Image (cartoon, rainbow, N blue to C red; front, side, top):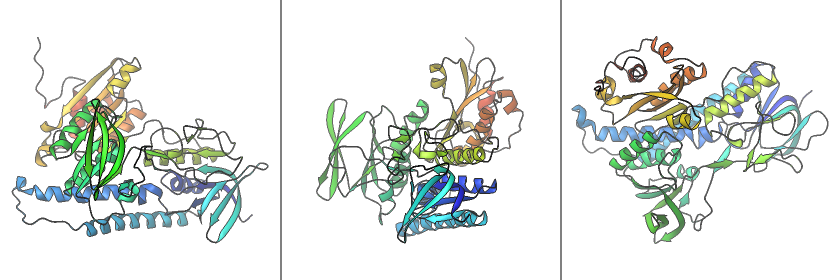
Length: 472
């Protein structure tokens, strides 16, 4: 019957559109509802535009330092407007590609705001409201994938015009001469990298004892040193109390080491995280169980309401595009009666600074907290041929393995192409591979990837290109 679906997905971000396409491929009549651009935050206001800005600003910094390679360039400048055009064109191409995929797979795209209605009978019902009016659709199952939006901390001054989130930052026509970033997580350090490379004076204020606090301690320490070397001012254990207007700029008052201090800038970026986007998502009486603003789900991602599922930033866990996509695939396969093809529990974490940062599985600290006896293998990338060729800054690859079984439990990387190479570790951890099994594969020379082999060899007979420690 027209207007009836097997699955309706609310939200066309990386979780929603992937789930919709997968469900359609598995034979389900599928519709996806979206009130903004296809691709969601990731493609339009997050991952893709941010990485495009990182690439452009890194290229500008590389050209400025090209004399290291015997190449001399004078009067190096950039056109911020052209950088924005490049960012927008990249996003546009990807969005168009996804629109074509949805159409080619027979997914019905409904433009408007999707709202889950109170269940009546066996079927679920979703209202889609747009400028043309409202229409209700019946469906066997609903997948909530409305994503998240930037969070602002509840302190005085956060409503001032110069206090922005990542959404507004992308709309700026010129880079600020100076900026203060509240928060020292992934979003913070990536934008700090961009604007410091473009000449902005950047100050980071992080409430926790270290930046990127959810990552390996050594990564945090090394990244802090590198960012400081590039002129970025970093204050940790710094609790921001208020933001105030200061002439044409802004002043952040914060407490560090029990003393009130201040940092000033033309702009203040609030990068303290994101919160689930539930605005308009539920009609009265159709709200599933929630905890701390997020929808709670079971192992199959089903909410407390039967036949209603939720994924991505709406639920607890990693707020990452690839995590949402994997969860969306899992839901589609569950509804189609298929065995799950993706392990959603091993989620790679990536930071696109320079050098890149990536991790998967457990850190050494986390393993010890769980009472697991582990050993680690580590390789400093300054001994890697490819890293020397490209004059990379200090970096390393560290692997964590079970001491008895030698099964790989985790990996932390801070080096060039780390975000590309982490996939090898995700595969290994997911399939419970051992160190010796991973070492059976030959790695090409010269590549950054050789560093993985060296780190693994440290757990066997010792890395070839590392001077052995003297025995006492």
